[in-house]
Image (cartoon, rainbow, N blue to C red; front, side, top):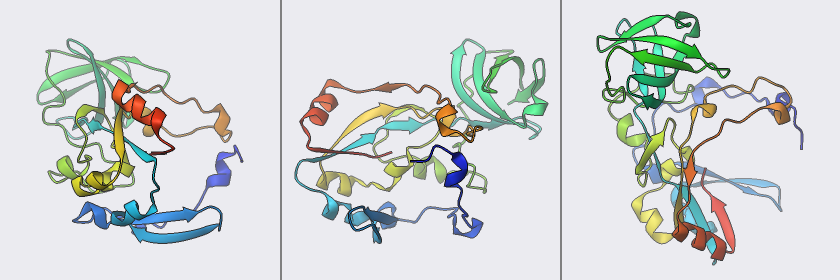
Length: 238
């Protein structure tokens, strides 16, 4: 297996990237890779059950996406708030970074914030003039290949139907296609992995092995652990 990033380059036409989900989650297309036959088959997600075997267990991520995206009052700076560090202090990503160097200020909802520190990963530690909940009034942090502005519909559709543990700044996208009916028909369990800022950061080295992944918070309940240990084939839903 190659560790060169350039070996994984491919062309993806912009017009093939859907900017809106289908009306029904289960109508999404599903690509099946038959490894033994080295063949690809295109099906619909609602057919997932037909490909499972006795003893299979699907493991899904029940994290819930935070409304972490905010803009400065003048619209010049986009913020992605990663976590609240304490009273009046937050960690965030900003775009464009040149506008928010150490000491730079901005306003959100007429509350002034300023950059105290820039980490080695480019994250900003900002201080606020008063303690406010920056997730209140925020929007969904859609991935960069979705080029339209986020709206009220995304508050529901950019969440899985089973997500309940708030803490992610991006959705576990493979889980977006599940519906309550599909879940009722397949054996499954849940773990919690809060998707962090590493999902938005580029791989800067052509040697994949040299890329440093950021840590992410997770939890596995005793019940989920027991189910996983007892399963024959474990299928992770990313």
